[in-house]
Image (cartoon, rainbow, N blue to C red):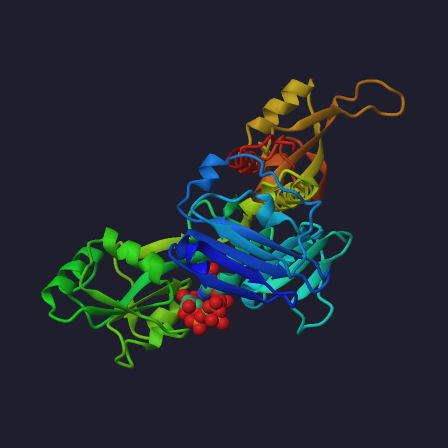
Amino acid sequence: MVADLELFFVVYSSFQLEFKETRQANFWRSHLCSSKTSRSCYYSKRVEDSGFHKKKKGLFCINSSDPTPTDKKVVLQGNSLPELKDFSSCSRSKIRIAIPSKGDIGEDTRSLLKESGLEIRLHNPRQYWATIKDFPEVEVWLQRPADIVRRVQEGQVDIGFVGYDIVAEYQDSSDSTLLIHEGLGYGSCKLGVGIPMSWIQVTSMNELSRFSEERKSPLLITTKYPKTVKKFLQEKGVRNYRLLHMDGALEAATQMGCSDLIIDLISSGTTLRENLLKEITEGTVLESDMIMIGSPLTMGLNNAFGHKVRSFTRELLERIESHLAAKDHFSIIANIKGSSPGDVARKIGSQLDLKGMDGPTVSPVIPPRGFDSGMYAIGVVVKKNRLYKAIEQLRSIGGSGVCVLPVSYVFEKKSARWERVTNTLGIDNDS
Ligand SMILES: Nc1ncnc2c1ncn2[C@@H]1O[C@H](COP(=O)(O)OP(=O)(O)OP(=O)(O)O)[C@@H](O)[C@H]1O
Ligand SMILES: O=P(O)(O)OC[C@H]1O[C@H](OP(=O)(O)OP(=O)(O)O)[C@H](O)[C@@H]1O
Ligand SMILES: [Mg+2]
C-alpha cells in the first residue's frame, strides 16, 4: 500500500515526524512545527515547481476550526494537490518574528526594532525566544541566518530579518519568501571573488575564465554559497572549477594550499587584504543588506490569523520605514520676517538645504494685540549632516529664534512597500 503513495507521513504525538519518500519524493515537502509555549502544533506545506502559488494567487482558504490531533496519520495520495485544510488545520495564535541570534546583525536588528518602538525582552541570554514590550501577541525567535530563511518559507515563522545573501542562497525559489523591506541599512556587504595577490596576470572575471580553461586541473573555489556561486560562474563562463566548502575563515584557504581562490563576504576588504587576497573586476556576485522577509504561507491566509499577521506586519513595516526616514533628519522651527507667506516660502525655497522634505510650513505669528507683525513661523525638516549649513542659510534670509528638534517618525501617505506585498499576495491593500 505504501508503495502506491506519493508521500507518507506519520505524525507522532511526541511531535516527531517520520518521513518516508517514495516515487516523487521531491514533489511535496511538509513540515511539522511544535510550539513549546502553546503546546499546539501545525503543519504547513511548500509545493515546489507545481505552480501552486501562481494558480492560487490570492487568499488561501484554511480550516482553522479543525485542529488535527498530533497523532493523526496524514496520507497524501497521487499527484493531485490535497485540500489546503489538510495541511493547515492546527493554527498557532501568536505571530512569530525571527531575528539573528548573534553578532552585529543580531544587535543591530534589536536596535532597529527598539528605535521603531518595539523593545525586545530577552529574559535570559541563553534563551532563544523573547517577547516584545506592549505586543503580547508576538513571539521573537533568535535563530541562525540560514534557519531564519528556512522557517519563514515553511510558514513556521511569519517575519524574518536576515541578510539578502542568505535569502539568495537558501530560499527554494523566488516566491517562497515575500520581500517586505529590501534594505534596512545595516549588515551591508558583498559576496565577491578573492584571488591570491600573486596572480598578477588575472585582474578580471574574463581573465579568470580564460585562466581556468588553460589549466588541466579544475580551479578549486572555496565558498559557503554554492548555489549562488554556481549560477554566477555559469553567467561568467567559468566551467573548469570544483567547489569546496569551509565553515568560516575562508580567507585562510589559499595560503593553506587547500584552494585556488575564495568567494566570500567582503565588507571593508580588510580580511581579504590581510590574507594576501585581492578583488577582481566584475567579481561581485551580489550586494547584500539586511532585509525583512515574510512568509507567503501565513501572510496569505484567509482567516483571522492571516489578518492578524498582515495587520502586524504592516504596522511593523511602517514603523521601520518611518523611523528610517526620520533618523537622518532634524526638524527646524524658526521665525522669519516677510511680506506674505508666499514671500517667506520663496526665500526659504531659494536656499539649498531648507527645501525640506515636503516644502516649508509657513504660518503667521500673531502677537497678543492681534495686528500683523510681518513675522512668520516656519517649519522645515533638514538632513542631519547639513544642519549647520541650514542654520547659516536661515540666518542669511533673516531667520531668528531657531529651534532644532529630533524627528522620531516620518509617515508617508501610504507605504509603497506594503502595496507591493499585497499585490504579490493578490489581496486587497487593507485586508
Ligand atoms: N563583514 C561583514 N560586514 C557586514 N555584514 C556582514 C559581514 N559578514 C557577514 N555579514 C552579514 O551578516 C550575516 C551573518 O554573518 P555572520 O558571520 O554573523 O554569520 P555566520 O557566518 O552564519 O556565523 P558564523 O560566522 O558564526 O559562522 C551575513 O549573512 C551577512 O548578511
Ligand atoms: O571585509 P571585512 O570587513 O574584513 O569583512 C569580511 C569578513 O567578515 C565575515 O567574516 P566573519 O567575521 O563573520 O567570520 P567567518 O568567516 O568565520 O564567518 C566574512 O566572512 C569575511 O571573512
Ligand atoms: Mg561569519
